[in-house]
Structures are given as C-alpha cells and as structure tokens.
Image 1 (spheres, rainbow, N blue to C red):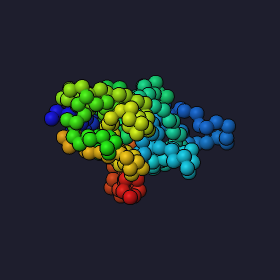
Image 2 (cartoon, helix red, strand yellow; image 1 turned 90 degrees about the vertical axis):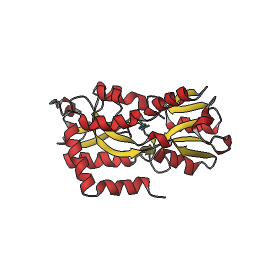
Image 3 (tube, helix red, strand yellow; image 1 turned 135 degrees about the vertical axis):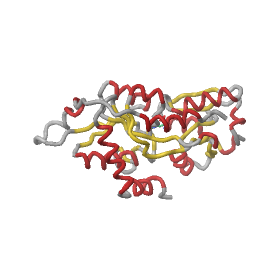
Image 4 (cartoon, rainbow, N blue to C red; image 1 turned 30 degrees about the horizontal axis):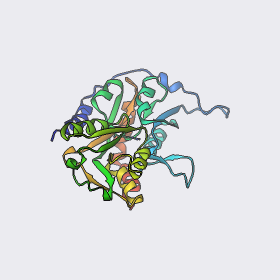
Length: 265
Ligand code: ARG
C-alpha cells in the first residue's frame, strides 16, 4: 500500500535541510511583565495541549501544560539560558503562529511534512511513532477494509488527514471527519458519531487504557513518522536546539524522558 510514502519522505527530507538564517528578532519578546528586571530572554513555545503524553493538562493536578515535549523544551531552554513560556492553541494554528512570529518555536509532536517544510524549519527528529486506527471494541472493525462506508475521524491540519485521504482513495465510501482536538475525536467515537479515528500510537494507548470500550490496531504499512521541533524560517534557534537535542541523546536525558512519559505502565 502506498499509504506510507509521505511518512518516509518526511524523515528523509529533514536531513537535507540547509542551515540558514541570521535573524534574532524573535528574542526580543517581553517577559511576563511587571517583575524585577530579568536578564533572561523569554522564548514562547506554541503547542496544542490535547496530546498526552506529549503535551496535556492533568486537570486533577494543576492547570499547567506538562508532558514529554514540555520537558524537552524546559531542558533545552535551561541549557541555552532562556526563560520558557508556553502558549496553547489548536494544532491547526501552530504553523501560522510561527509564520507570524507569535511563537518562537513549536513543540507539539509535529511531523516535518513536506508542505510544512516550506513554511517552517524543523529540528532533527526527536521521537518516532506509528499510526493506529482506534474504534469502539464492539464495532466489528478489524482491518482497514472494514472502514469502507465508515466515518473516519482525524485532527484538523494533521498528517493523519493525509493518511485518511489515502485510505479513502483505497476503500469505498470512507467519510473523513476533521476535528480540532484529539479529545473531540475520542468523544465522538464513544458517542458513535464517528466509527474510527487515526491517532498516533502513544497517544492512542493512553485513550485505550482509559476507555475499556475502545480498541485499536496499528496501520502496519504506515511505517514510522517522526516528531521534530518547528521554527520560523531562518531562525537561528534551530541549530542551537539541535545541538542540545544531540546532547540529550548522548547524555541519556532523552532516554530518561522517554521512560518517564512513554513507558510508565
Ligand atoms: N504528528 C502529527 C502531525 O504532525 C500529529 C501531531 C498532533 N499534535 C498535537 N499536539 N495535537 O500532524
């Protein structure tokens, strides 16, 4: 099946990106305001906090956005001597926010898809995932073919939309339903307003653990899709972030965070 070419090409293209850019203008962001003069420049991270364990709010604990991506951002900001501020928005608004310089970088489990590479620069891949089809356990869905004539949900603006389109080309009558948030997709599934949804493995696993009425399978042919950090075109931050990412892999910090967020039972 060809479902997969785009995923592979994403990963490949990333390695080919030319380093560019000199502008530092984004660093002139104001701090939280009001307090004593602070030396550190604040970097604004854009994210879509609907994506545990990458980024989410554990409302039982606090209103803070936490997760794998947040820990990576905090580590890098600390290393490079920046303050970090996190701005939550719909996933679909993240690239536009970068383009308007409303955020300095985006860390949101985002895949460096070719069209995104035209509008943003990406770091090296820091984590790879596979795609899953999630559905009600009693729906009788067992394979991609079973999606024929069914409503297939995906997050608006995500790579899963492309994948859904490929599935719809292959199997008759697949209707694609786009929603702003992954949590909306899960609710729609549970309420039988959609029949299935495409969600990345680690994110899907969390919902499967929390909802006994849901089941899922991996789209085998899909292959792995990587997440990377996005920057405004030409941002000097990209190279600085890459350096710390490499350091995190070498010093074991990345593995520590992977165990903390992805392997904790
Ligand atoms: N990896 C997928 C993409 O780049 C989905 C990412 C969704 N992230 C989120 N924070 N909701 O399109």
